[in-house]
Structures are given as structure tokens and as C-alpha cells.
Image (cartoon, one colour):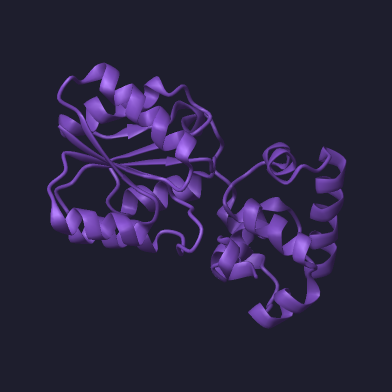
Length: 220
């Protein structure tokens, strides 16, 4: 069985390789550090399943996934991501992914997902199944802002936090990733809400998605 592992973090790639080498004696794991690299590899060889990260440096969110599913419509794709956004999960499934797993789940869940998709089924993270779907009516009340206004109104740190909220990350996860206190993150979130005249975190996330401010290179 040949497995494509697409993730920019070596720790994740190594952990997945170790998992599949333990489970399948015939497993051949091929690594890719970016979407561009992955698309080149699927054009050169056949794979039984692909495990891909959703947000990677230099990649526009969802564009790589759309290209992969379009280029290889019969390839089962398992999305493994840190986001806990129901919207992101649904968008991945709509684009053609067969499974979506939150990185907060036990790594054995990836093996469960692979077994399920190889048999023609789908698999969703238990963590995401328990999350309440956000109120999409908030999208109808977003202020009429342009991208230039957002980029000039917010500080670099606030733009960074807006990006991470758009990826579905909680204040706790943002604080850990950016080595900030939870209170500092809350202060920045409150400042974003005031500066852009938004009501809540859901609107921050929707605004980030609307303007494609989900990756480092897009908010720079």
C-alpha cells in the first residue's frame, strides 16, 4: 500500500510513517512538504490514500485540496488539520475529501479513517461532531469592509490572530502557538472586534475566510 503524507511539520510526517509501518508490513510512505510537491508526486506515481494538512505555509487554503481532488478523483483523501471549524470540515468534504480529522484526536484515529476510506466510506473527527455549527446568519451582518481597510486598520499581531481564528483555532491554541498569555489573546480579539465593528469571533472567522486571510503569506 502506498500512502502520500502531505504536511510541513516533520514531527507529523514521522509519526504517521511510524504508525503505518507498524500497521501495514507493505506500507510505502511518500512524504511531501507542500501542495505543489504533492501534486507533482501524484502525477508521477499511484497512491492508495493521501493524508494532507489543510493549512501549510505558501499554500492558499483549500486551493491545493481542490486541485488534488480534481486531479485524482478516485484517490481517497484524509484531511488532518488543527482547525476545529465545522465550516472548514464541510468545505473539505464538499471539495472531495473522504475524511476529516482534528489533530487533537489520538493518532490511531488516522488509521481508523484510512481503513474506512479504503473501503469506500467516509470518516469525520469525533471532536468536530460534538461542536455546534456556528450561526451562519452572522455572515449576513458583516460590515461593509474592504481588504485594504482591514490590512491598514489592524496591527500585524491582530492580523495574525484574525488569520488563526479564521482557521478555527481557539484562544488557548493561539496562545500556545504564539507563546502569549490567554489574557493577551483575549485583549487582541477584543481590539479586532472594536476596530472592525464586529459582534463576535464567528464574524472574525467569516471575515478572514471572505478575504482569504488564512495563511501567513496572505496576511503579510
